[in-house]
Image 1 (tube, helix red, strand yellow):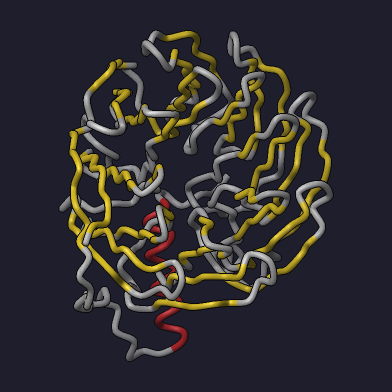
Image 2: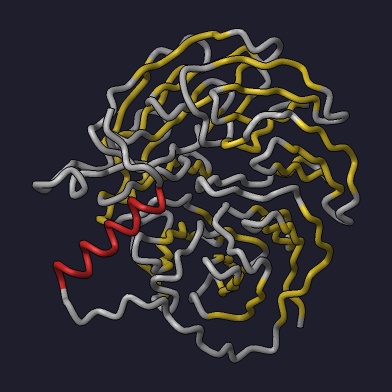
Length: 382
């Protein structure tokens, strides 16, 4: 199967082709940072180095939180548990495997996936390894569990459910891959009885968690254009569930709100992203493929505001915390906006090597893991 070598090279090609086809005079330099007129600061509560960071293969190793514990990993195989309030280490293990998908959680267990297609389960309290299971190909997104199963989405277009107790395969759902895709997969979303997953075909599927039977399928994008690159419509961001509405978005497709029970559209708008969505204050937030940050009304789908002051800064996914929205860029800056209007209120440089992994939050604290492995807990103060 033909694939681009790296996700980064895909996006570079897309950006270049878009610029050349629309206006030869477009400035391809990253947007300069604007001054922030605010009396707020983004303060560091604590910082900790997490091994060797993300590595060179565009890994997106997002930290995960359960209670007062934060779990993080690096690409070399180190997994750590930290007190999220102080940063104090509780345990650390070395798996001696290249981690490419993590970190996932599920009722007392921590899950990571590897480049060699292994899924590893650790005890959340001690870090003791519980099991390893081989799956069909690379795992580039966090596995997700509900206590009964662990759902794993693999690079070859499969969703595999493993028994949470021992790692044995429960079921597998196969999809057909397009000729060309972005290098990555959306993380599956697992509820008590359903696995929601987005694919490079531009479809979101709802699959029974018990037996792997398809419940419904909805298309977010239709491949168009003459070249394979024009026809890339991957869903790279994880499905987002808010109450009974499921939100999803695709590259070169649409953002869509769906009824979680039957997959019927509630609203849809043309848009393009390869990032996770986030939610807060009645909005759904999206970082589009041009690095514009947008807020859609979660109920109606109306575009409420748009911030285009960070274009070409290679933004990661947006994350909400408190009343704020955070995005991070290729130079390692974390930018804080008001959720209500998209205005900047604070900024801080976290990692000179950049930040590309999705951030996570708990209450009014934002947790950011940079490309070199620097992990910081941040909060907004006057």
